[in-house]
Length: 178
Image 1 (spheres, helix red, strand yellow):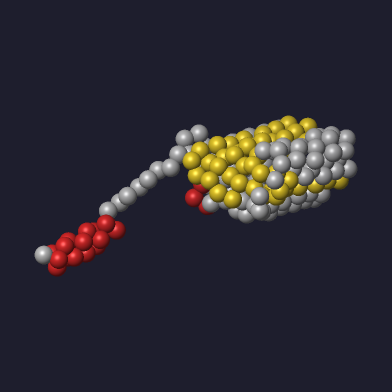
Image 2: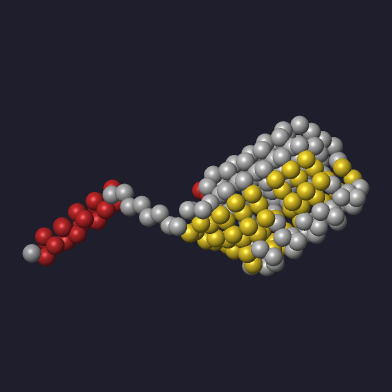
């Protein structure tokens, strides 16, 4: 009798991995810095980033095509190198005044992004930050930004409106090259 039970358990264990168990979570969450966290709602496509300090880590690759909007809360201080690169369905992003730097290529190839406001706490728009954001039509740069780096908006072929403050004193090579 015990041999039959053991054999039955072994058969069940052997069959289970073949079955397809899919659990769709409505919300995913994780960490993207020492004290910075993210939550992603699969139903709305909204990613919320909150905490204190810099976004230093790339988020989960499986979400790249799912994120439509990013809301960064006050307290986040910087956006790291290439963190949101190629988020091709990203349409909008909210960056608070607490963010003082955006890394190179942070939003490059976000081909659905349609407008961006650079907050006043950022002094430099880095190299290739928004490169090849094909749907980007409007860029609003707040007073306080001093430098627009090389190729920062290169390949943004739909860009038709740039609001630039007096504080910008340097624009590097191919910053707005189509």
